[in-house]
Length: 134
Length: 106
Image 1: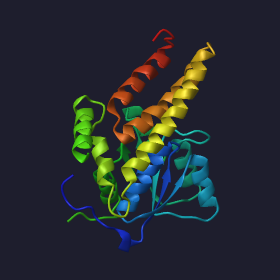
Image 2: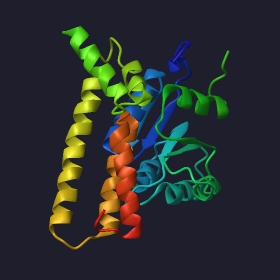
Image 3: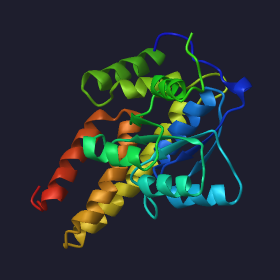
């Protein structure tokens, strides 16, 4: 990948990774770390909701779609019902039009197809106004 | 030794076992995290071994619970996609297609 990797540590952004797959958890955690974004990791939608119920809040949520117990669509809807206004970016391997639409309509601010890369994450941050590319 | 590793790695790319996603992993390795590729790869192998074992057990039982098999495959495909294990990903997709149509022979 050409170009510098931006460092957003100064912006003190926080993020939540919501994914049931261990390898994805590690990857997404590291991607955010690399960009200087402090982040927590949970395994499914229910844990994401619980984290918010216990008072935690994040600037950005990276939400996987297919997860056990509570999936990404249900979790996104629930968080929005709870009044959570964090930016939520859906990340999934399922990119069929119908499913993408359903996921977006649940309350997403952005969507990216997996696998996540540094440039896709920068693109999300740019789309959500967290980062202005120079 | 480094040259040998480089040759093996190139061969994995050439044969389609690895794709450009693996390069992303390497990009994430730095002085602060010098063993990142090794750590993710180790996790991938452990996780995959567990999944393959579960799939094996399910198949041995004889009754084909396609939903369960599909669920395992979804996990396996997810990990493989993230790490750049291209051929594994392709095989998973095929397996899931068999599950979808209920093809036990496949």
